[in-house]
Length: 555
Image 1 (cartoon, rainbow, N blue to C red):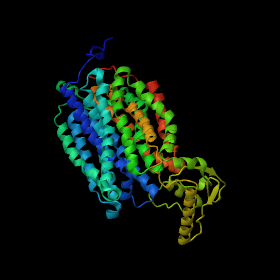
Image 2: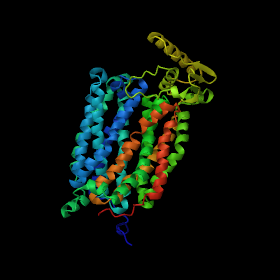
Image 3: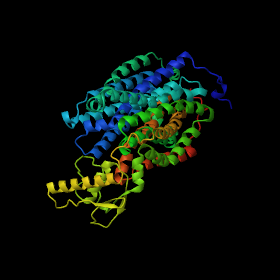
Image 4: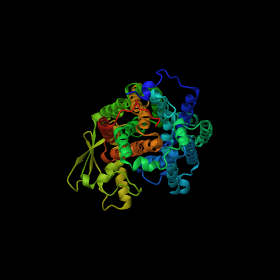
């Protein structure tokens, strides 16, 4: 049976209009991702500015949680703007989302700190993140649908891969701005006020991007439906209240997007946070190393998009998920050795264990910022170790046992603060922390990664491997999602699974993974999150996900 793909000219060359569509759509989406990821890159500074009322570990997790808040509402943005896009049109909808994103990002640069206006500061910050998330929820589906509906059937993977590349371009642009500013004004000035500048200059990018996108016409597929009066009057009902379509929404989520999302955020964001917070690599160096890996890996988004037009979307996406599930633990172990070899040697020669009754130990995350983790010896020990970010193992002991931290063969007994006065408790805890800190230093544990000791080529190679997996799972995903759903409800249908996957499964990954590490003391434990999700997607996708690359989408 002949398909539209079979009758397409095999050597179709992109027209001037198609190039404009790809360029304008991609540039606008780069800007939106630049805005969105600035927050993630500057989480450490934002933690200090807006969450200074809680302890350091909780503050950083809170900053990551506010980062994740923007992802939490993305599915709702997909519903709201996806419906508008299927009723009103692709072009005008993503112009609106761009305006919301740009203005909310600009506002973050003007926001007073916690020290100036107290708890109002983080509340306003989170509101801005929610607006960003809503806007991004409507942006991606519109841009991907718009480009795909302009593309010839046999080049949809290639054309939409330019939309896929925008997320990394946006991150790359944000990295370059941050690196440039830190270099130009110095770390002290950047921490004090310079971190605001990348947010503020986004207003210029907004103006340029809006002007370029306003030169575009409506998608030909949507225009044809509009002219014929066949657009959907109730896209939400058609997309999600009818099992025939809802079934594909669910399959797209669990059989493709969830795994793609965790691979994306592990390979780019979690790797960056791991370098900075766990490996103690200074922020500027970590940003530069990630930027180099991104620059090397980014062309592969287009390569895998092109390849998916030849061999299909499914083997590339699911293959990337399966490889990620198998390689993450050895890759991050190798990253430890390369980024902080002194720390790796200390972990091998003088491993740390905490012996305590685990039922008496608190989870090392305080949602309200009131727990000082000083009511029992286990909490005193674990709170300090969580702050250091050093890997440790837990050994259970009978109830009432006073917690002990063992560094190699040296044992440090944590004080039992029960019954002590406030001053005596503080003195006992401070004394214990100072002694343990000295013991860790004597055992070879470094306070920071030594820049001279970092094996930078090896770090870049490992980060490149992580980015390559990102490109494999992400390059073809837009084309596959577009091809799964009918044109009259395409914007709505594809946006929801994409943003549940990337907003929830992916966006919550840094917060969840670091909370898992804080709870267990194992610096690699958080990797179980992406490993399990990626493996599940590889298996479920293999069983349920159809191959779509030869489908005609003009109906």
